Image: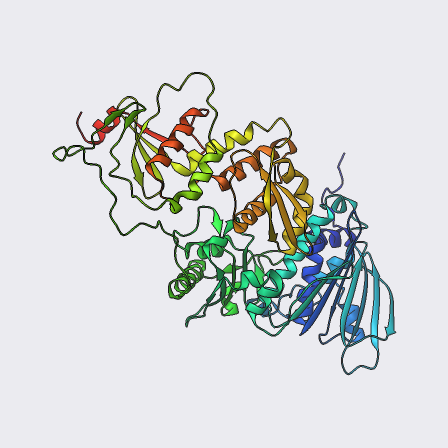
Length: 595
């Protein structure tokens, strides 16, 4: 018996739902498409009003003062692939607008209830179009100011599967805040106002000054700590602002990129910005940066991603090289920027002479064990080491049971990062001081994992300011973060008060350090519930540990090594990086070809 065909032509409703699924991932996608349409319509002022309840974002209203639409265009705007931006395939190579596919309004309308009101400046009356599930239910004249307002409600009402997978309100709001902030940074010439529950979250001036926009979004404290990146002659023009390395954080969320005014994500360009800082940024961290690249539209393909988040360059390496060079030039030419380095006294270190005729260090015995001549250590004032002393006091381990049989003796320090010690068998140990101390801090914190967290209340609570996005995410993560020993309270607006930090092993004092830690913890609260606390302890240990490129005194190195070998097996840090590398005597003999 012959079976019927297995290939079917999908009906129009299913096709529209599939298209909507590609364009509209979440409420922030709706906001992005509507705001970009407003920008393309020549708006100078855009208002975004978000309404929500405890479970979901209920309504999105975007109002602009752009050119508006005629009654005929208002009807056609919700047809699939209806657009005023392009006419033929040849136009795809010269796109200068943010939207061009004609999918946004059709996709949004297919899965929501929409009311559009619009009027051109010369028209006496405006037009109102109502839609439900993509179908127009009414068209009428109305009184409305010039421009366009689109009111979207009941998002995903007819696609319950997509609705089920939406995150918490705080998370969805964070995505909206982030998207609007990125749009404002890529278009400082447009005034954007964002409201939630009719309360203003921020407003930009629209005067065209990027620094003014940054201050509106992130505050005056950050804007005062920025270095301008100036455009240079060439096929690619790079301009914007970058922040000092001390304000860096994990991940690329603080890198704001745009190409020809289009906000994008690009791992390659973000890495180029980071590379422009050279060795002044810790591994895995990125600076705060707002960078806009201007180039010939023919050299960039914006039609490679359904939501237009990514673009493709005809010569990605050339663009990355230009971005890297622009950042490096800004840092080099700035009078206020200095790459962090180990500070040393101009006076030479005191040398303990044991045997002037012996070419190698000579060990001398003391009642405490083996002690090395300290000719490899730079002597400095006690103030230089105060912070390190406090960190080491926090990780001092109680003596339990018999004394450890052997503590390697310290030979010296290399590049303020690696400690050389003599091994028990006559070999050589090289210890990464950050990984070693991170291991010690983590071991102390891990002992709390099965019980209630131990808090250390700060004598003076530290106040930190977060972006709207990060504040929204923190509200979801605050209980998890408290379980790791960090207590935060809202302090009005987007300011937060840090009242306590973990009691064991942690000495984090500076507001910038605490803010960076909180931001990293927010990003990290994504794993299984059972693992979150240990993952947060790993993050806290990394932040609280002695850093690389930190000069230690002989006594501090000895205390650190003693703590390391008193703890659990000291071979790796919590992230799995080596803390100790060992060279046996046979390895050394082989390296020097003595065998």
